[in-house]
Image (tube, rainbow, N blue to C red; front, top):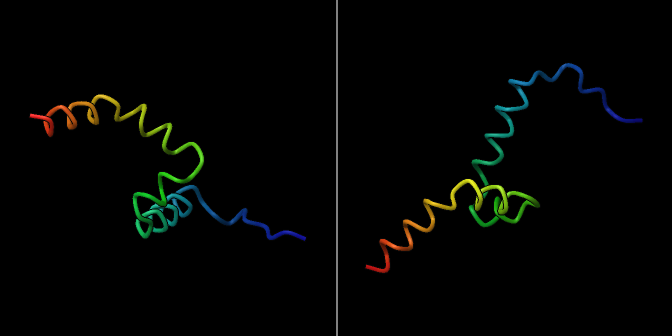
Amino acid sequence: MGDNYDWVTSEMFAEKLEELVGKMSAGEILAVPGVYEALSEELNNAVLDSLQEERR
């Protein structure tokens, strides 16, 4: 059947996730379902401010 991952701690998981994400390009990260939506909402004002600055 499946593997038992009871030995994996939250800290171990978070560290490995950060390591794997660090190897991904921004485009790969944004292509993960839900990530674009979450980041665009979180960074909405920063994106608009940056675009406004570039326009000047």
